[in-house]
Image (spheres, helix red, strand yellow):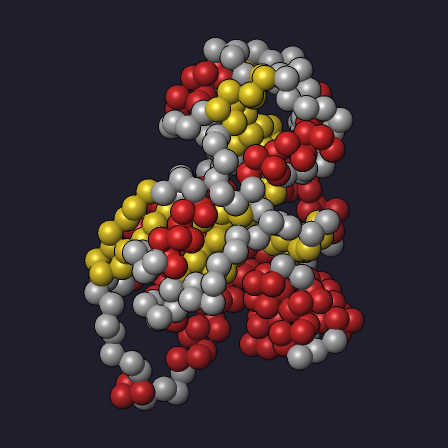
Length: 319
């Protein structure tokens, strides 16, 4: 087979809806036909693009790369044949962007500014994703980078749209002297006796997701330190042996800290782009989405522990 635009639209629909069944409904196709189409595409590309979870499907690392390229190609294809007069005149000169504490922000901004020099970005750092939704609903920001979790998607009104950038596994940061430091993966149950550094609830269900994962592993954390600070401060506390913490897989560990995958991947986190369609046009959305995806891939490339996990996790399905 050869990849066609319709194949790329199938992949994007699956990623946007988080489900083959919901994607089939959006595309007006049957679920078996959409599943068959996905298998044929994955066979052609030689690696899995999505992984099934209890609440739907999430893109693999390779899938993120393919989806970013697919969206770019579809956006370019949509612009083909349009006369310049048909393009709406740009009305947005200032773009008000809110973002959670995400390491993708610097790379996203540098790429977006390069691609859209006509836009002036003003950035607000907002911790709670629910607060970000409120800012969008009140027309106080135009676009945002937020997080939610598979099965607990962020709710908003029709005045706001969103699209998932990537769904990533949660890893754990341990002191370099920890007894499990040499393990390739760490079972959450083996950390039952640890003190935990836990960031405040983010309005998207983080505390419930964390405690549910612990309960499924057979324990309730005995000690929880609420922490909201910089990544370096957190690693200093972990290095001192004061506790462990769930971290993003792209976290760069200090010399006295190790970052390990959690066995079975009990926690997934979705990073998403949200925006007000009344204020942000489709081309700006594609610019932001593509820049976010490229910034995330750069972080993955700089994270050997994340790349090693992805290689082990997905190699079984490779030809």
